[in-house]
Length: 299
Image (cartoon, rainbow, N blue to C red; front, side):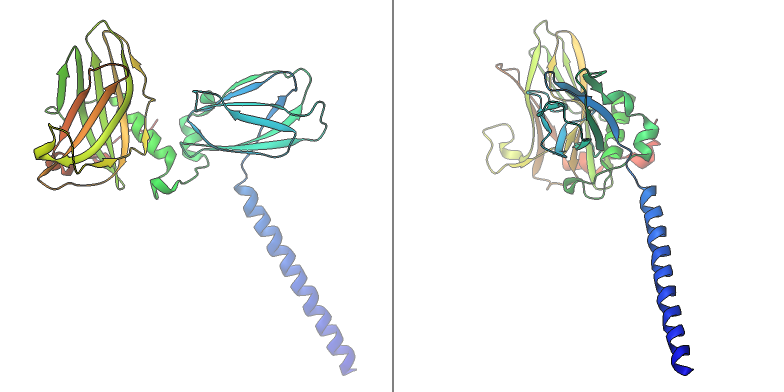
């Protein structure tokens, strides 16, 4: 009788363990489903190429199968070309994309001889509510900063377009380069610049350079310079047409400099000599405006 009782007790314990495990698994599955990234659906074909325009530069692409071929468009970091590598495939496949603003996109793909659309503009899908509730991929260079939040802060600075720094600028050959503001948030600097072209000749931007140099050599051939690489910029560097004004925002790691050094910000003209240079003192950096104190409105 005792043997039967023991067998029943063991069986009860085993059943209870499996029921608990199943319930725990079901609970975890439910929690996991709460974080599900809903995929977009699109069609591809063999004889035509589809294009997807993303709100930011493409950083990563993963194709789900050999049924697809894809690549970034030349001279367009935010445009993805994709098409079927095999005619009339019947199985559903997928691909994923991560963009430089930290957004993750997933697509379920079906074959169609005549897709309903060949071009997709994901810019229209990136609304403020979607950004705030969306899925962010954290990049190492941004630390704990959300890429979408950093993008929103740059956008807000750009749209507010306030000049809080009024003593840093350069002007020559009809070109004026201004540092309109320095902002700091969560260990990052936001440099707000403006370029005014008062001439009739377009100013084609080659590159913008940030570096720390000794004050004694700031106006001569630079030695002992420490280059700084922007982590992000709000707008791609482009051409400034004649008699127009353009602004930009650059994101850099927070830093300070010694009193005998200066931060140099240079903008170079492609195939031209109208280079502009700004000098920023350490006192300017330590008086950067805190974004939390600006009451920036993120729409």
